[in-house]
Image (cartoon, rainbow, N blue to C red; front, side, top):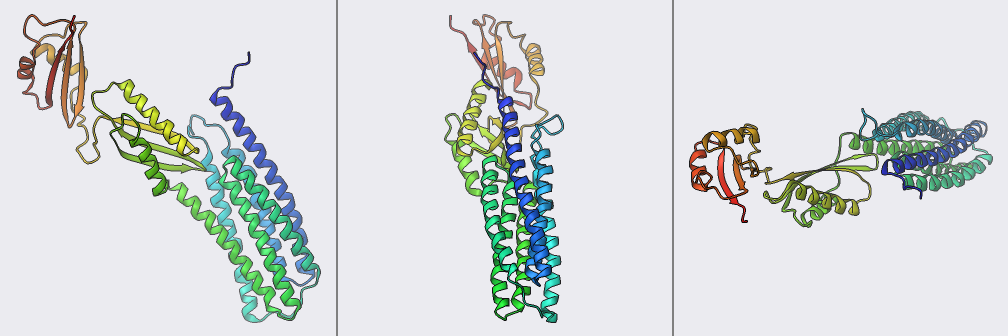
Length: 386
């Protein structure tokens, strides 16, 4: 019988599928952008349409962004390694930042150039009818590639692919502006063509700014929304065994979410029970948000957020055992010692395997021998019943 794939194998398979899907849709979009860029730039130059020419430049920026996407996606979909244990998704974020910056620069240059032309009144030509044909072809094809690219981006959870899809949508909208402006210019309102070129440039700047700002927000580790954070805290607090959640920190890496959460539990439970409670919290949170990549939970025996943190100078188990042996006597071999570090004090529990005939291990005597130590909080002695 064939063994099921391990989580690591499934992760590698998913990365490979995502990379192939991203490459396919990006290459298709790049070829379409190159074709549209050529016909629009040439058509704008030959048939006197500043708006179509600027729209063609916009299409060529799509080609550049497609090339950037191909390179960045290949790098960002690499498996985690020793130097990048959380993966390489931040490369995708950086790529989106670069793409947004390029769009802002191109849009600003085109807006400035055409604004000067509009102010100076350098408008004396009427666009030809082929401009209308090029604009219609561009609107239809770019709307199609937008829908296709966005669907793939959502499927593989890639902000970069989704950003590239919206870049295509701006091309469709700008071509629609060209279409309307060309009709107006052909009817005698010549300045509409140049005004449309300025409007398209502003659209490019707006989209570039959105990509850039969102990427900066992620790179500086902006956390989840208030609503999502409250939802996750409620899930933790409603988990059996959790007394409180006094800290929950989050950050994004691409579409993935990384969490650090501190869970307050009863101090007398075992380490294994505390871990199991944490795993129940993890399960509940993953069920609420399916794009959580990693959750680090810390089990706290008390809420130390508003109190003094545990002192680093409290004695270790070896030191406590040595002090007990000096002030009382060594704990019998089959007996055991449990330590509770709470509110900067050390609380002891001694579990005796059999009754103490000497009277040394009694709560009163142990307290008397240990109460002079500044770290001492309390002592309990338990005797096994045969």
